[in-house]
Image 1 (cartoon, rainbow, N blue to C red):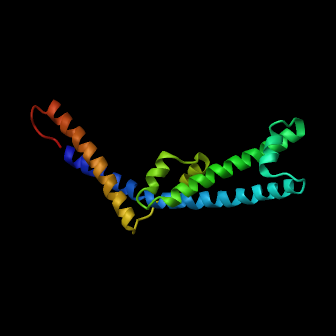
Image 2 (spheres, one colour):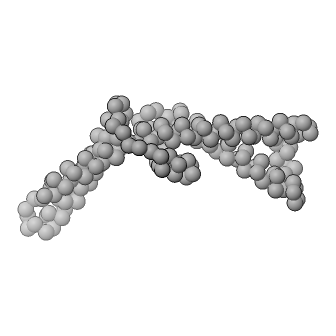
Length: 165
């Protein structure tokens, strides 16, 4: 019974693992859209402040000493610039990584609103790429191996020497 359960868990791991490349690609597409949108917003801010003789750096320095209405306006500008810089760096890191590494980078570091948006809309599909198959094999190996180990230990402890996994 333990071997059968380990095999079933391995299959579940293969199915889940095979989705990693597709999910990562969809995440990157969503991320690219957000970077493009923020780029447009920040460029508009930059054009507006340039009309008053400011650069982004000088405007940000003045924003740090602002009060009342100017402070409220500066908060939006600073937030947009900071978010654009973080998302652009995150996208560059994902684009620089190879197909096999991207899902691992995404698992380590992601933007929660984008991740949630992608997770909500993501529909699993059968992967037909080599890296999709590699992640399927990895998912199978991890869950099957862990389950086999666990059932082996349980079988040894409870089975009086009989082997369950």
